[in-house]
Length: 282
Image (cartoon, rainbow, N blue to C red; front, top):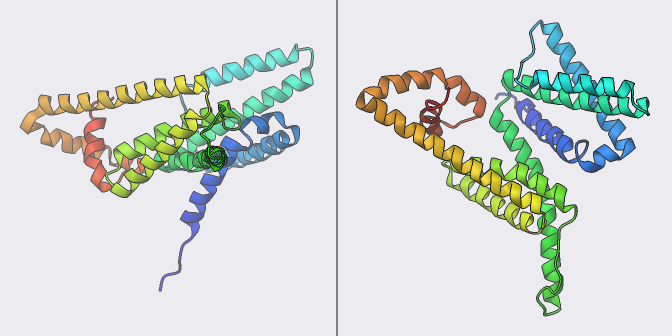
């Protein structure tokens, strides 16, 4: 009997916990304004970033590059110059250090994906950690209605969940991932689960009463619809352009993108859809 290997599961749990802490602990509002929590978060992230960079340098491999590298470095340089000439250089330097650490988190994330970290796994870590916020918001909504109905009355006052604007921001970070998962998967149980999660996120968003959150959600829905429409149109153009003779080209395209599908965590039954969609993009 082969021994059980808990390493992959432990790595996934660790990723979810790390993402949850970055989104709702060290990276949330209170994590930035609370001095003790800020020091703890920045210290832990600095240690982790140092270990990652040292490991990469020891392996003798370069770092993944992104189009934002120049802009980030330029912004950090400008902030450093500003800190030198500020009225409170110590406080300004702390702000520059905080920005540098979060830039490092971005680069490590990009580097991890380049090293084979599944994009779909990262997306699931984000929405699993954010669903906790949805559950907390829904708990407040349920308690509000329960208390009024216990009196035999409908609510006579308006209600908003706690920290409505940060909650709306988190929900706008969450629902596109849930919607993408629901659209792409062919598993009925997963579609149903994502649909329930989307419905809960929608109710929570309604009770934030955040105009910025509502506008952001509307813009996101329009962008998502436009993106899906572009993929459908690209697939139609591919079919019309190649017709019956396009099978070889599509097969060649599919072989060329097998590694991308592995990175995304795409299931075999989904692969034909992704291949046709990718054919329309450079």
